[in-house]
Length: 236
Image: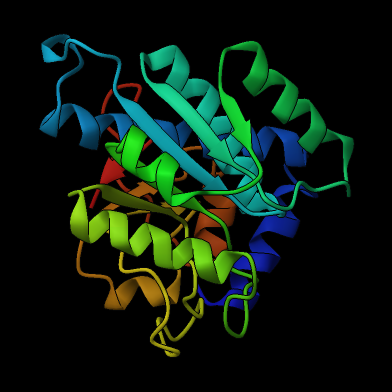
């Protein structure tokens, strides 16, 4: 999907089928958590580790960040220790405040900034990039430009897996990493349907959109993957 179609599809999901933003965010975040669990388990099985593995989630102020907050809560329930970096907490809707409360209630740590000391001491197995979504344009601004640089270093120096939510941060949703400053994640989790920029992505690609009604899928030309069993995501 291009940016215009992705926005239109989201609007229709909340109109004709009557999904609420909160419902869509919950379904999207669960999809992200399942993809992270799948990737992490293949490399570091939970039952073979003596300490609780750590996942770091970096959340932006919009819906992409909300998906990350939901994913953090689910990942704790799956058995991971989670820290959320949330520099610009959204005050646009009370739902975001509720998500933060829900995270804290299950033991997720919420921080306003990402320090080098934290990255070195915690060494997260996975960093989830939930900063910018398909509405992002231009180049990342402070503090996210610095955070993206820190994430790249962790990926290079610590063998940390980067998982991006829907669109890698810094990428144009249609054209990809045109600025050359975006993340190059190891894993991409496309939500509802892959965006045009996914064509230039070279890593592992999951799709999480099992909530999309067939009529809307047909209208927008989305080929729904054959999700196995009860899984909310599928690797494509």
